[in-house]
Image (cartoon, rainbow, N blue to C red; front, side, top):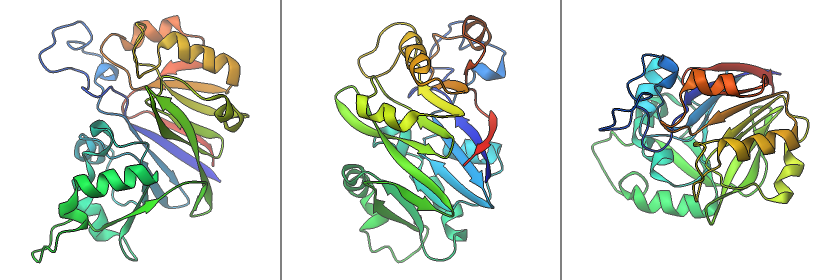
Length: 257
């Protein structure tokens, strides 16, 4: 089945431009240097699956004219990946049947439920809450004829999820990939990897480290995401191998799911 992946956001947790910064990338006129917080949308067979609800989700959804969602997958519970949950409201109101399902690791389910108690625990009689349901995810998930497989990556000292779906995999926010997870990354058409910058970071991958992963996994196409303002789009792309690119907000890719 053919699917389309849309990059909703390709930036780091502070976004680009970064507040108060006058660097060349933050002042760039290249629209590919404008990076909202990281998220992707996968569409296939008339269905739409979102990975992460960033603080920029409202802007992203309006930009891409998202009219419906069938499920949301969460990679982890950091602010730049969950704070857009309230902006699911209009899409959740349209979801049929029942509540919009949100899938995440059990620890993330517990964190999100506690952080957004007004959604999940409050007895609010005036309406207006997102009509969503948290569901723990500990293994592969079948959604509307496609298989979404969690891929464990290490984010600093914490295990979080990336996801493989068909011939594509999306790994954001990782400083390393465990040996066992490489088995899940074989025979890929598309691979997304965290590549924050060139300078080492304790919880994120560098361009150089992600290039080593690409060389080992050998996907047909690789795209870097969670990019900070250290990497100008055009200049960085010119330095990368032909099958590796920086992603950008609004990028659309087709693949088999």
